Length: 187
Ligand SMILES: CC(C)(COP(=O)(O)OP(=O)(O)OC[C@H]1O[C@@H](n2cnc3c(N)ncnc32)[C@H](O)[C@@H]1OP(=O)(O)O)[C@@H](O)C(=O)NCCC(=O)NCCS
Image 1: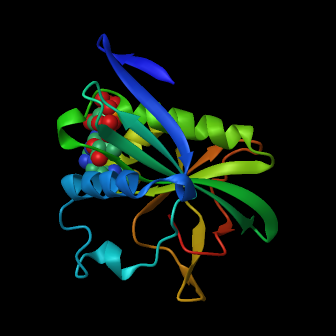
Image 2 (image 1 turned 45 degrees about the horizontal axis):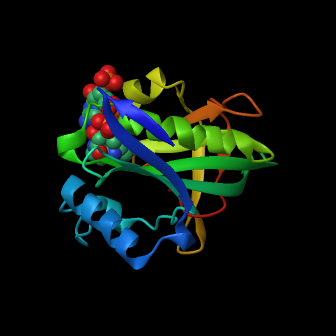
């Protein structure tokens, strides 16, 4: 899929993570390093948590053909207030510092949500983010979730309190309260 970025061409692809080549994986690692060089270090707070690996990803390549932006996608069978629900997750959203504020992440998030809508039975979308980004995701239609989020850490159900949780209505309205159980690690 091609779009324009101030008349310059950008390319967007959605790929199952398992289909990524070694070279593509190392480009994603390089992007992650450029976005947050400290993130892989064991003393980082986020490294204390167990995270799910994305099953699909959206990648956006800038006009120079290089990977500029990445969004991970997870499909998860969880529960909301005890009822089984399929949850569509987006995470690991990142854009190269030099390529920010061109709408790349917005473009990629829009494609990720479109993909979730195409899947059968995905009740709602869920993402976690730091407080400063809440307003950004609200502009893209997401709502802040005020209920409890349970995730699995080392095989045990644990309350998620690391940062904030946002939801997006898909086949069901976005839950704003209650208890969501991801029945697995967060993303
Ligand atoms: C957040 C991020 C992915 C946005 O990428 P991008 O391609 O520049 O996104 P877009 O061009 O679609 O939108 C940029 C918007 O994000 C906002 N934004 C980015 N970082 C922000 C921050 N820390 N606090 C508040 N707003 C922020 C910008 O102000 C801009 O707002 P606007 O839509 O009103 O213009 C990018 O800044 C990034 O990689 N940040 C570091 C990693 C991170 O925080 N990822 C999010 C994990 S949930």
